[in-house]
Image 1 (tube, rainbow, N blue to C red):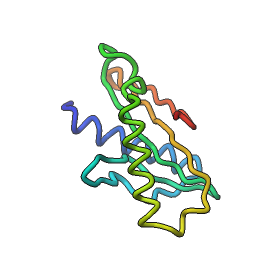
Image 2 (tube, rainbow, N blue to C red):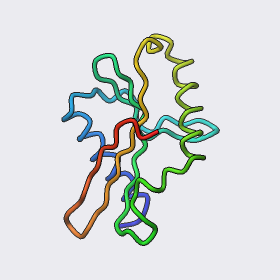
Image 3 (cartoon, helix red, strand yellow):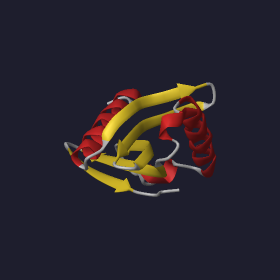
Image 4 (cartoon, rainbow, N blue to C red):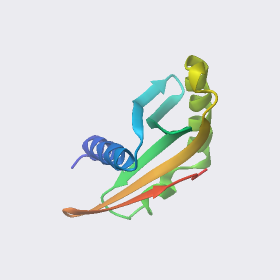
Length: 117
């Protein structure tokens, strides 16, 4: 599976996981000139900006380890830009999560890390 396909499959799995946890998906692949947020979801009074990392091996570490401090700063900036465009969401509690997916053949391990950064 090529990286783009793997990433899309991982994002779909992350959305399914969030929906099972009671979240509504507001946006997938929110992007502008500075970067992209994979999934934006809400549940109750909580708004989650979620980065999804999917790998098919651990040659470069666990998937969640790829969320660098630079990527975290980018996601924070993007979240602020998203909220500027959607002021109706300003009263929500904001959370930054990571969904980490590791495929091992036909099996997969999926971890939802709440408040990851």
